[in-house]
Image (cartoon, rainbow, N blue to C red):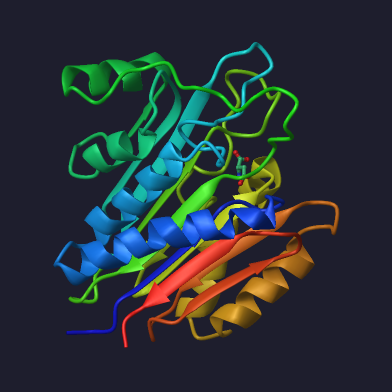
Length: 263
Ligand code: ASP
């Protein structure tokens, strides 16, 4: 049995008071891991708990787009190379579950009404997503989770309503492999912040490679990427787990996060 670990964030630039809510979801995940759940099951569980919490811009509580719609993105990846992601899904309070449903399919990414149709055919919950109240700043508060289970399997899950007041067709980093997330070779990374800036840098993949190549430790890779790839005005955060099952979180702004690891 290897050391188990969970780390989760509640968004770059998000209210630091959200940390206890993240810890609560992580602790639910820890109990699930201890009773034998896999890394993938646990990552999806923790992420869906955060989606259900209206404090976060993911699932319930997502921000509205400039046309008033609420469209959600999510992604799931395992350390052994399985991947699923959904983009701009309407009426989907738990997009992470749909993303997880795609990981063993031939098609691993779906968008918009096509994603919703696929989900309807498999009975994933369809329900109008209750957005965050207008007036509350909601450009951030995206969620991301990374888990290692007792067999050493790695999995991650991310979910967001995107950045507020962006057009309905806007695609951020969260559902884009290598941008908002990347896992493999015993290392996983998830990003948060301004999606357009993250996407331009292919941030998660590059940081992941810096760590797996041995060029830098994870905290150094995080610090240097945040400092060198982005201006201070661009909110960016990263979480990760390295090959020694150590958890790290870094951001150039407030970023509530929580972690758990077995003895
Ligand atoms: N990266 C997300 C997006 O641009 C937002 C966030 O992380 O807060 O959609």
